[in-house]
Image (cartoon, rainbow, N blue to C red; front, side, top):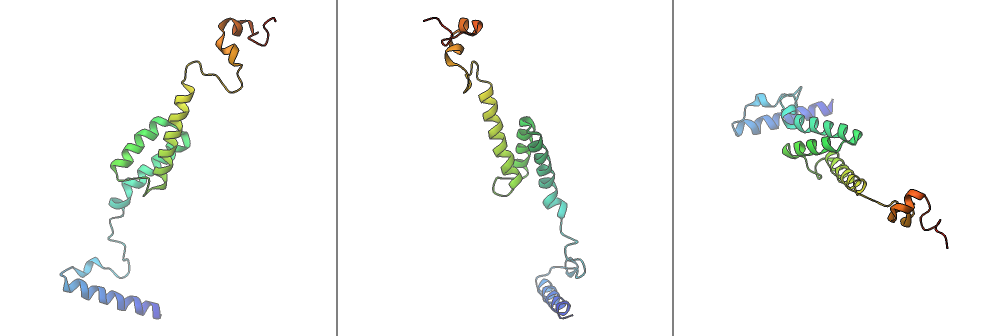
Length: 134
């Protein structure tokens, strides 16, 4: 009861201040104070872009990540104001690094025999340096 009275008193103060500044009191409805806020205009485009980024993150799709990160930039998303944008940008860097590493021609793996990889004849025979006669 006291809280309702306090809300009404504060509402009256706001209406009085609005009237002094020439702002219509209809912009401050007591029952539904957020009903006139432009929710979609403020949050819709960014939220839909973040949802697309979530999908691209889940799919680990480099092409989609790039496309939606560009769209997010256009809509004002940054690493500082959106956790989803940050995660997507980091994943894009990781996927690009993984792609560059796997695209290296003639890459030698950690457990590959280096001498076998260097010698085409040794690789074909399966002998390499370990199977060569002394």
